[in-house]
Length: 102
Image 1 (cartoon, rainbow, N blue to C red):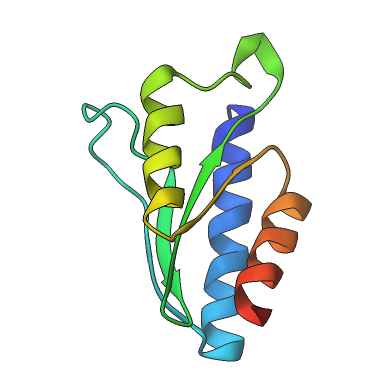
Image 2 (tube, helix red, strand yellow):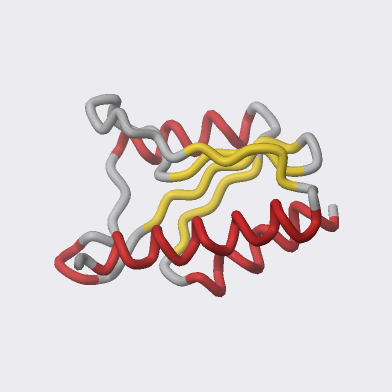
């Protein structure tokens, strides 16, 4: 199994836990349309705050964002959404803590 697939499964399990345990995560969506360039790996809404998570792993230059990913994440930030590029589950946990306690 690819590193990014493993990370995605860990993150989704964690986000599901956040939703079940706190009731604060309203929804989580994993885009299935990989034709649309730039869409983050995971998008959701927690406490009324939109968030986007782009997952990257360092293996084989996979840690680099495409131009469309950069532009999309920038647009999300300009619109007031939270966004991050995460390489580990710990980075996602810290990101979500910031959203949940902001």
